[in-house]
Amino acid sequence: MLGTINPEILFLQEEDEVKAGLLDMKQILEITEKTYALLGKGEIQNPPKTHLGIPEGSGENFDSFFNTMPCHIAGDMNIAGVKWAAESNANATTPGIPYGIDITILSDPATVLPFCILDGTVITAMRTSAVAGFQAKHCAPSDTKTVTMIGAGVIGRTMIMAICEAIPTVETIYLCDLDVAKAEALAAEYKDQYNVEIIASADSKACADKSELIIGETTARKPFIDASWVKPHSAIVCVSNEANEEVVKAADVNVVDYWKQMKTFENKAIVKMVEAGELAEEDIVETSELALGKQVRTSDDQFIYACSLGLGALDITVGYQIYKNAMDMGLGTTVKMWDKPLWE
Ligand SMILES: NC(=O)c1ccc[n+]([C@@H]2O[C@H](COP(=O)([O-])OP(=O)(O)OC[C@H]3O[C@@H](n4cnc5c(N)ncnc54)[C@H](O)[C@@H]3O)[C@@H](O)[C@H]2O)c1
Image 1 (tube, rainbow, N blue to C red):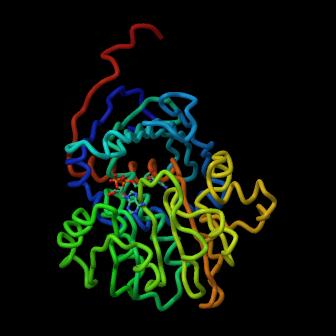
Image 2 (image 1 turned 60 degrees about the vertical axis):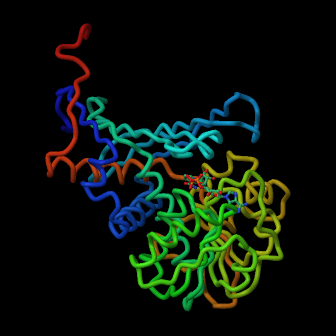
């Protein structure tokens, strides 16, 4: 409870979060837009995430990594929080464990007491695709009917939800993966959930050639989308390292989720282009600007590129909504920091 010295913490595991409405993509898209608007209005402090690669110092060749993502959201919400985010290459081939695993802590900024600890894994998947969906809504041509999604993993699953909610004109999704059986299984699972045909494929490039919108949500360590994928009347939206510098260069408009953070990651294609003097920082459009009403697609001929790295504040705003829903529904397990603090 905010503003009290009660040391109780509500612990929410995934199953509680699902009961509390976490899979409601419409709700997550609304929170996403609101959070980016707050960011644009200066109501959010969100220092760039701190990255710890394992083995440390191994640059991009890590086998696993951890990120700390702290933030404070002012205004009506007034909460602080942090996501401890992690991904492991080994998990990608180990059944029974997700590739990315996250945990989120919500804290009272007045007493600094944590009041909720919740699984952040599904929150991350939902909000990552919601950001891509929100960017795609603004960046894709207005008549977008065909989408290629590359990556049929956890984020691929939530991407189907986000794109079907955010872009109602979509009729066909090509769902591509190196592991085509995985794409086929996911396509079968979602075939009746939206009024959209989902076609599994292993040939991302051929599908992309037929699509107005291309979305990358893979674990590829090196970019595989280059200038040959670019065409007018289209958009590419990536949540990871799928597109290379040629794509950034070819774009009429480049959109990022949060430049202050993105620019601290030197391996990102858009950052390399700025460093090389090929793209001016002031020409990059922030997702917060989209949330505050900026129009980036001014003609259907444009090619627009958008990318994201993940905004910690969004994990906290989504987590807080789920916490409030869970409190109303009496969900979760309560634990305590102490019965009485040993020292004060
Ligand atoms: N931007 C963000 O906010 C954010 C947040 C979370 C995760 N991510 C990123 O999302 C990506 C996907 O994460 P996930 O949890 O869905 O992983 P996952 O392991 O569940 O799924 C990734 C899928 O990508 C496929 N793949 C890898 N390389 C490919 C290629 N070249 N072509 C086609 N398919 C390919 C794999 O076969 C796998 O099915 C990761 O790179 C992760 O870092 C981004």
